Structure formats: structure tokens, C-alpha cells
Image 1: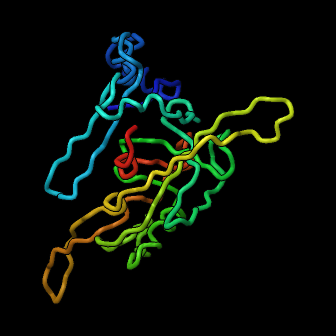
Image 2 (image 1 turned 30 degrees about the vertical axis):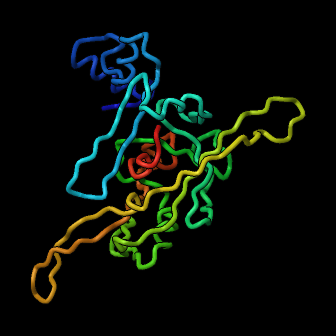
Length: 254
């Protein structure tokens, strides 16, 4: 279920759907959220997403998607400072910093025009269970967990992590306002920054594999990194430097 903006970015997809259904209306092929709001003018133009977690792998948890209103206890969200969107068609916002055990990771210059040095553009995407981020950032996170080992036999940056191991991972988003004046030296005035610590259950993913131990096939439980290497072809995508998927979104109310 697409939750994206309507954008020229998706015009070819919309055109293909319109052609297939012989319907050239503006709502055919548009995103569900867009169509819900178009057909309900009285509904406030917002939607809220809360993704939950469980400590029991045998249980099913319930997430929440609300259009035009808010969960009880979260009504004040509309009064919070708003992060700017830095790319058309995606929920892309600037990430101020990432810290592990208090140490700040230094990102390379963002590929997205207009994002300041030291920041990167991250897209909030519920379609990614395992968030892809720059490979050096992945290594920065998991090398800090005692006993974690990178599987050098794999090119995709797989880390085998002790299932009871953890680290302190925090993402910081700073809210800024642009200063417009003829003699200003500083381009931005920092208003405030909010740290979002990541729950330890969102750092590793549990899996089961079969190994030959003492000549016998044995099922073994192991854990691996939820934050994965970003391996998208730079020429095949645009508008973000990293994706903060469900392993991040479970820690916020958006």
C-alpha cells in the first residue's frame, strides 16, 4: 500500500495504470493516501503511522495507520516542530547525526542537493523491514557490539551478532529555521534537536539455520544485523542517502 506523495517521479507508473484500465482520471493510479484525501475534503490532510514490536516471536503485533486523526495520547504531534522534506515524491528528511555509545559517525557529503555538510538525506519507508544505510555506518554500529563478527565470506555486509548483545544507537534530528537577511553569516539557526534511541530488539534479527555438528544436522538459532549495507545502484535511484525502515520506525510515532 503506497504511502508516498503524488509526484512527477511516479508519472510513468500512473500512466501505465491508466492505460491498462482505460481510465485517464487523475485519481487512477494515484497513491491510496492521496485518493482518500481527495475524496474526503473534510478530513485533515495527514496520516499517522505506528509500528509495534514483540519480544515473543510467536506473537503477532498490531500496527496503526490513521488518516486525518491521531492515536489517543499523541494528539499533540501536530504542534511539534516539522522537519523539512528535501526531495519531491519521497518522505525524505535531513538526518543530523548518528551516534553509537556516544561516538558520532561522520557521514560523507549527501548526494541530495541542498542538504548541509555533515547531514544526510534519509527516507522514512515502512516498506523496508531492514533499513539499508551506508556500509561504513553499518560497520560502525555492529563493531561496537562485543562478540559481533562480520561474515567476510559475504559481500552484503552480514554481521553475526550475539542474540543477547547490544549497543546504544541513537539518531538525531535537529529542527532548523532559515535566516533571510543581507548580512547574515550563518545560514541556519538551530532551534532544537531530538535524539531517538533505538530499542535493542531492533538491532538484530533472529534466524534459524541448519549446521552439521559432530556429523549431525542441527538447527541453530543465530542473530544478524537489521541495519544493512545500502547496495542500491547510485545511478538507479535518487533522493536519499539511506533508508530508515521498520527497525527505526518502531521507535517513533510518525
